[in-house]
View 1 (spheres, rainbow, N blue to C red):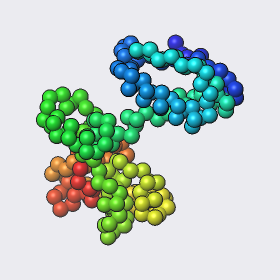
View 2: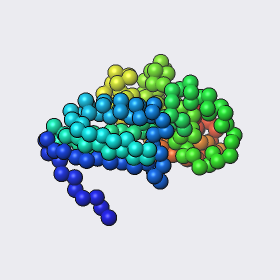
View 3: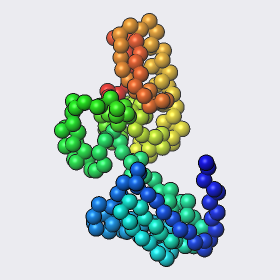
View 4: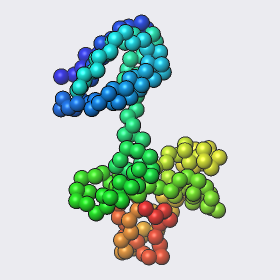
Length: 211
């Protein structure tokens, strides 16, 4: 059954509630509650909400908020922290993630992890910017699947259309080299962000960065 249309207008009052998955606890201690309140306060400040009441339970919460600008959807639709993960399975800084990855190398169950999360992290854009051949460097950066045309263009001081042309040229060149192929090579296709295999002659491998 679809959710009823949410009516939004300046000055509207809403009772908002959310429950933990499978009714599991979302707060384990007072520290969790304090952190949630800090985050909620930031949301209220950012979206100009007025909180009239809140109640934190073990596995759910209730809040009553007034939206001065009629922007409830914008506030409750903040991007998830999981959306910012890049080639990692753990939420934390780089050092923390590397330590945990070392402990889990070779453990069973890796096949259940998406390939996008299992592959090694791409080099930073600064690494590609030091390469002497600009077009090849921009195409290699895009082929990692970790950077957008806009991000690459900003790093190289180019217009994103220039980067797009370099990427298309590299893809066209790589495609023309794939005739009469027989040796298996793995690389990342930027069009679908998945590992694919191509068969090509050893001296005609496409110019793609190592994964």
